[in-house]
Every structure is written in C-alpha cells, then in structure tokens.
Length: 181
Image (tube, rainbow, N blue to C red; front, side, top):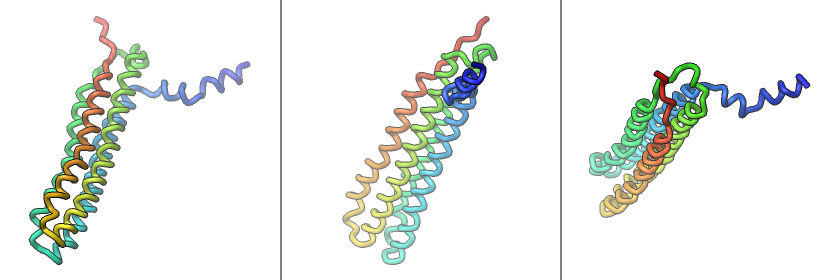
C-alpha cells in the first residue's frame, strides 16, 4: 500500500500544485517580454534584409519602408507593457497561504496571460515582418502598391493588440488572498 500512495503523490498534477505560484508568475512575465522581443527581432530581421536588398534596385524605398521596422518594434513594446502590468499584479501573501487555491489561481492566471501575450506577439512579429518584406519588394517594383500593402500590415499588427487585450483580460483573474491582520 505504501508504494501505491507514493505513485499517487508523484503525479504531474501534484507536482504542478507544489510549484510556487510566484514561480509560475515569474515565468509568465518572462515569457511575455522574452517571446515578444523574439517576435520583434525576427520580424525586423525578415523586413530589414528584404528592405536592404530591395533598396539596391530602388534607393527611394529605404526611408518610406522603415515603417515596417517600426511596426515590428511595436511588438516588443507590447510585451514590455504587458510585463509591467503583470508585475503590478504580484502581491505578497503569508507563507501559510502560498498554496491556497486563490494563490494558485492568481499564479496560473499571470502565467497564462504571459504565454498568450508572448506567443501572440511572436506570431504578430513574424506576420508583420513577412508583410513588411513583401511591402519593400513590391514598392521597389511599383510604388503605387506601398499604401495598399501597408494597410494589410496594419491588420497584421492588430494580432499583437488582440494578444495584449486577451492577456489583460486573463490577468484580471489574478487576485491573491487577502492578508490576515
């Protein structure tokens, strides 16, 4: 009988409940900012390399197409903003209430919010980078296409805003237990 209780105590669900909610919160905050910056960097890499290549054929596109790089950088700023918001959600609780259901829910909510924002911004950065790349290449061929593709790029940038909104809504669930006086 002792062996079966040991197996039941070592399940994944038991292991996850034993991890501090502050650890989940910190990982969520780190993912929000880290993966958002990764998405921005990847988008800037994609856009920048195409912009430099296309500028060889048509140097006039360089300054005009820097807006695509700015859109990619906005993705990193989204992650920083949400990380600051999530950081303000952290509150200290007495050690007797760290593993209370309300504490666990708050930690999981901040963790989920960070994952949602981080990966939404990763996809947004890639989307804006790819569209910015095609915007630079198209503008080098035909300057009348710039505004049309820029509108599509704005819609791609909205993906990151949707992630930020969902992340803020998710983080509203993060309420820590009240301190006993």
